[in-house]
Image (cartoon, rainbow, N blue to C red; front, side):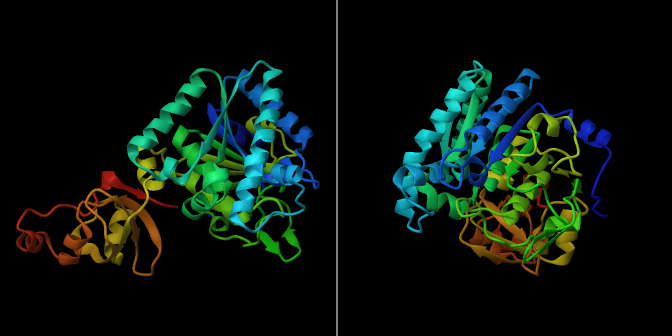
Length: 385
């Protein structure tokens, strides 16, 4: 499959016409000026675009960076500090300015906003905690409020980044959690490029990237801006997560591209299209909201059975496991080359699994003294992109 630089606007319109809920992520470099002040023009445009989409019956949540950057200006700091405590202080100060700005801009159009600050445990904690968060967002949408989401930088910035990643990834987690059909990542780039060099991207941005295109597997590996911390690499990770869930993603420029134009199918930004069915909430939780406790390594035959034939994983196909996990917990599923290609809920503890590696069902029954069962049932397995 090849990547095409442009697709007829009709194709984009047809794919985007079904969107009824989306998550917009906007980065620090787009929301703030070089003097570490909030860019009011960008905020006004974003608020106006969201209000216009709501008038079309589309629900919108915003994952907003910018708290740390805004706090730098208030604290008189010229650059992003290295110490976690200083970052948390800047976030605590800047978050107030950010939410005041959002509240004022949306209130002019009679729209309420609701602040949601997330930690890693909110997303990767127990399923009960996850479902409570789902219900919180459901209620916010029911009341007609626009959720404004950010990581809780003032108390948990290091932990969230270690377990989830940058705000691009947080946005993908939120999009999966709320069941959004689209994630729009607004940044300071026009889209994804097929080639990056030391002096920047080459050629024109790609109009459309389909699941399976090789460009999804690469990245330029460059760090983010002075005020932000992400980059193309994290945006590709977020796009792959959305495609895994059967949802779309757009990478666009915060100052040059309008949300309404993107949703109308105009050929701006890069649209990432999935090739698989949408995952239900339970499988989304298995894949991206249940923290994995270990690894299960499978042979080539088992990988083919899982990835191509949609079978369950049996003990005979397992060649190793790592970690100390209990039955019912989530694990990474890797091939013998160390490539993770799936995640699932394991039905054996690590101790029992090590006793039955590579064994047939009768052998498993003899070793454990009970009938053999699947290591991971296909209903508890999610294939990753």
